[in-house]
Length: 243
Ligand code: ADP
Ligand code: MG
Image (cartoon, rainbow, N blue to C red; front, side):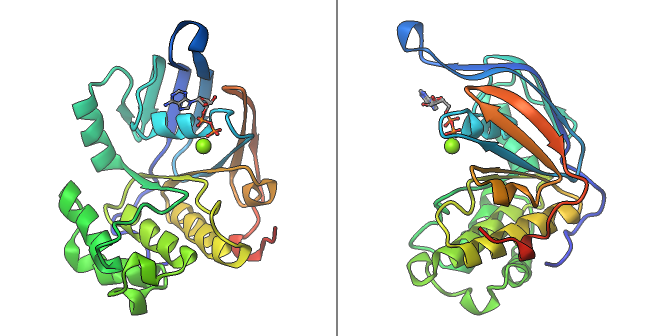
């Protein structure tokens, strides 16, 4: 993958005493309970836990898609706790990129247009970089294809190019290989690992132990809590793992 356009190691974040409850009274679900987590810039973090343990909620509060009920959150040097929704939108635009399990590409737009639309919507990045971005994810020859004409792995690579188009400090990926077979999943993980090696923060949610071996740090969740944070001094190469 080609290097990001600006240099420097970025995308660290810190959460202190973060809580998030959905619903009220008898129906209340404690999705996050007293989350404390500090991650330095440029790390690849895997969030590993059972379904319903709060992984997506954690990712969404870090990325400013949802606000926490209490606690303090700082991402890429920006304090995002207690912000209004409009200012969270600005934070997302300026600092984070998202990759989803089911790609979320716009079906009526080509691969190149799906990447370009992010640049237009955010006012960040440069349309002339679209060929470079598609080349970086190995899809130069698919620029004019629509999502339905691409495999799942190719669609996910377009969505990574789209997320990287604004050169975000922090890339957030929610089960990015969950819908993919092993071989195509591996190409997606290589891109995430390359992004962190190029000095960006990356957080990926997974419930696959093998996938988590490529991370610099593994955060385990259970019932809305972080149960362990493990630093991995020799992460596996994404290109070499099997599951
Ligand atoms: P995971 O990603 O680990 O599967 P989630 O963060 O999606 O877990 O969910 C954590 C808990 O919060 C679950 O019990 C889930 O049912 C609940 N939850 C998530 N989103 C909502 C919502 N919008 N409204 C109500 N409950 C929710
Ligand atoms: Mg989830």
